[in-house]
Picture 1 (cartoon, rainbow, N blue to C red):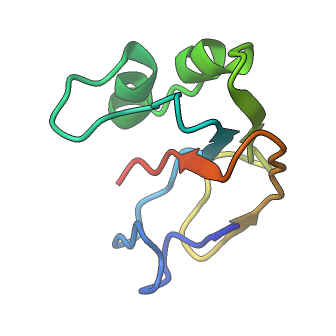
Picture 2: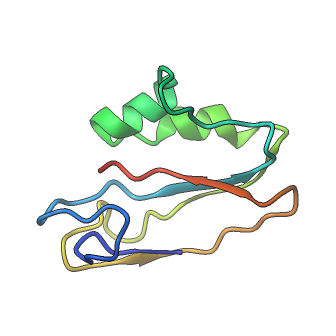
Picture 3: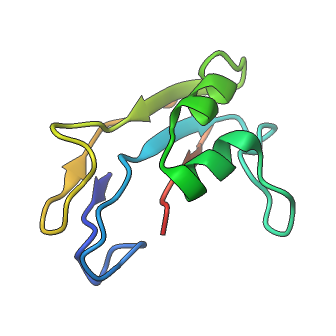
Length: 103
């Protein structure tokens, strides 16, 4: 997966905004990271409002339906305008992938 905050093809295209490093998780379908129209969990809320990945990492890190969880920190975080971040994530429990994108 490649995230470039200044690319027009990026799912989170902005005008010069730095990005919190992405958190990506592969999981079974029975696990939902968020639902449209529902209240966000503390972990999702913290990423959206404060760029704080730790609560969601804690919520998902030991979950039995999570195959892999990756935070693409790089050096240095955050992802600055004009730069990109790539990472690899594995899945052996199912095809579902969720990722944070604080746009």
